[in-house]
Image 1: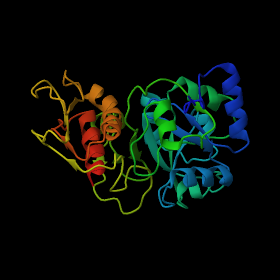
Image 2: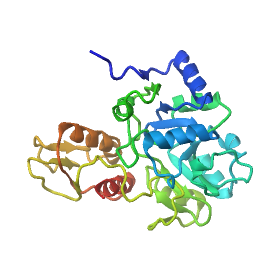
Image 3: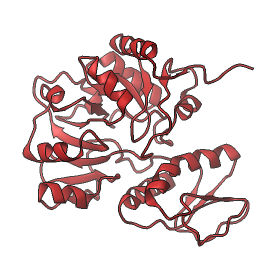
Length: 317
């Protein structure tokens, strides 16, 4: 039997060396991060960026997140401010993305930032991603490794299910620890949350000692996660549902729901971090099982539960 996952590799020295060679040749690889798996390419190369957009079938107006090793490596491209430095010192490397103004001489490809004078940047915590960033002299554009608007991947196998052999190297770093995309905070003016994540508005406020707002209506896409339809399994979704017909899938949370053949529990312990880690995995499982509709029970709107509800709402559109 043909191995459909033969392009998945363990992160040994030989594969990391080959991955770095691919990136320097403007090829695209798939890498693990602590949030979800990403499609990585040279952020300074228009050739690489065009490949990412083409592979993902991504709208040109939707910019990419650029990944750096540290502040020093980002200093040639980005205009820093005091809010960034405070948040960086507390949360980075980690699951938070900053929208900032770029320098005029920045080498970040225009398409990667949707021709804006701002750019979304992140400093990933995942050890494999950081090993690679240490060995290259350019940042990595690295959106989630899925087709545009569909479910983000939390494993190397998800990536191959999505792209088959179109990605020659998919590095297996195990399941993503968080399982949801990073918090995105716009620091170009008054701090605003453009996409909720595991790092909450309250945590950010406590560090910068300033009021932080949620961006309710996004007129201009400065970072990923703002599209109305996103994270979708391609199946109709009913939110806040206490019951589901037996022919449809029912995603539940906590112990109050009976375990039926059509039920999929995000966390029996009512643990929101566990629920976040399981959301996309359960979406994929339900889709593979052939269900035509998903009912989802109410998820508490606190901590990372705010991000979970955001993803479900966009998936339901």
